[in-house]
Image (tube, rainbow, N blue to C red; front, side):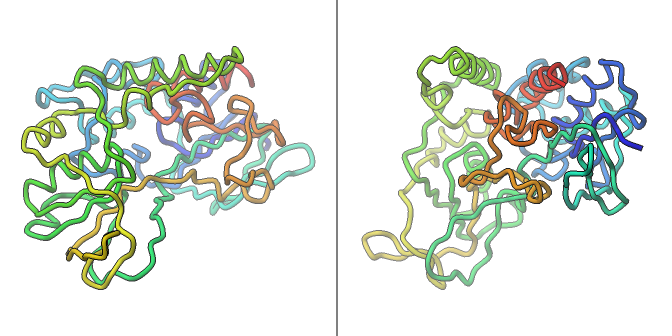
Length: 347
């Protein structure tokens, strides 16, 4: 049996794509399949630390067809658990028949189709839509030297209580670093390191404005106009409630990078050293594209060149949810839905 489409990944981008495939008349489980390596719903949100907040209210953090239920837990934006519950109910609501604990090993070319090889057999498809995201590929920059203390990445972080009373170095200048710094600084001695001075968005700017800016930037590119700084022109860090509170406590001050790791901590450019018990690397992620290696599509920068979401050298392959290069704001909840709509329309 050859499916019309196989979607790899059952997180927000995969579910949004499934919604539009179903709305186009295809039957879940018969005409198309959604494969997910995880045993439970929720995508990357199910693996994020519990106190993580979205950057927008629920009406601006929703997938197509059904608005996320309002968050009433407190005065802030929704917690990760609220998003997991929403995504779980979403796939049930639209009977998307996500096949779970199905780990994709590779995608290869067949005679007339692409073949998705998994731990539960082969899935031939006329089209393959890769929506594996980035969470499974945490990135840690290389520094000379070794550190004998505890190291973890954003992907491993769960609670500030795990580092209570320790000397903690937080590395990274994005939203994850700021949110983790805000809560860790309440229970531990913290130092923040960023490549450049952190840039905070105005308090009134949240995910709604960020998505619209990213969309206009994408439209300008399509019109052949010169690129703008887009979101980066405003700043990098959304001032969610706990980050604003950390600002009031005076902890949002960053140092420039160290030069090397030493056994007890790090060495700074002036030769001085500081001791730490824990380093938290909030240094981002890379697209999880290893399953597509057999197609030989990657460019020198490690990405797959696309026209919109479609791979230029393999038009039967589409990619969604990895960032602006696969659709404006496609790695966000609302952006994934709009990109999925265009993707399915193109198919």
